[in-house]
Image 1: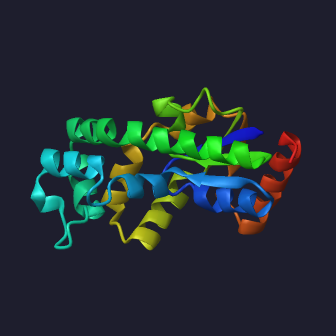
Image 2 (image 1 turned 180 degrees about the vertical axis):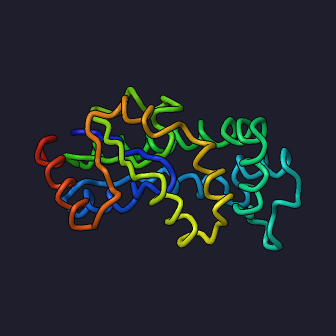
Image 3 (image 1 turned 45 degrees about the vertical axis):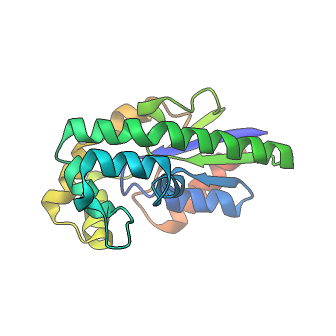
Length: 198
């Protein structure tokens, strides 16, 4: 079984690219989806986050208000580090469990979509091949403003909080530039899948 990592900075379009690989037959594990599950009310991470950041980050139903929490951690390096310490080990544990499950099922290709593969390094021993999805900065800013309703300042702040794309690219086995049309990206995805062998 091949395990492929797919990463890229915010608004690079890694989910779009991952979906294209899934359409070609890869089984997909979405770290963002797992990140949402591990902080659901009653989960151990939920208790720790509420204890660390206060009840103000909770919605009336007890769920963590992700936007409110993001506002706190994106302007506070220590807060962001603490949040990662609480959530990342639990996310990694679930990802490893899903990979084992797909292996038992006899899947031929499993793709792990995660923003922090390079930075955190917690999945490197699992991954055979790393794909880095990129987009030019103006495209990323436009996507954040249009898709998330961020101001230009908020969009730039989120981009600056991440490892520069040029640095991330150095770690990739394959690079997919997702700045252009969907057709162009789909052609790049097909070429990479053929090169990898699925």
